[in-house]
Length: 229
Image (cartoon, rainbow, N blue to C red):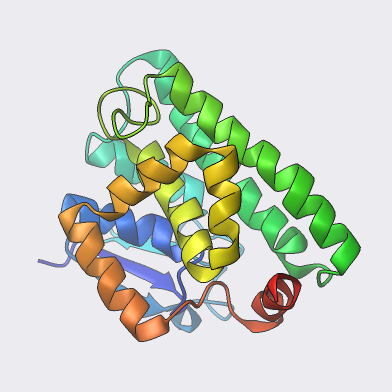
């Protein structure tokens, strides 16, 4: 039964945050090309958004835009949000942090292409700080080596988002795997465990066989690859 339509390009980047979640919960969905909506219809849909991803929920005939909003909606629908107020709020904070990292690693969504000096400042200063933030969040909530999750003893939407962020990043750019292991070893382990969950593992195997190490595409990805050699 078709429950959702996900409109995104044939690339991981922001789309994987939603696809990994839908795969985890076993939702029936169809991935549709972003050009079906963007840019021509982007202002005409209910609850418009500036750019993909867009999620269409069949039962309510409603569109949702903005990756963090989509994940929070799905987290509520499938009971993947913590029950207590503090970790519930932190789940949103984690997803927003993920979105910020995506913006920063693409040099503010490709506003300018990377040059060696500003890339090295990002890679060796800003990105380690981001990794440490995720690591400290996990450690404060019981994440320890091969046990626990980011916000407690139960998997949540925050774990899916974290794996979609860092797992996708180090698959696309293997040189960054050592950065994650050095700055956030428990997060590196968490990503491996989330990616090994059966439905997610099957999806990633198929996606990576089809797309290789594709990330965000275009000049932005070419700029990143130039920096990483």
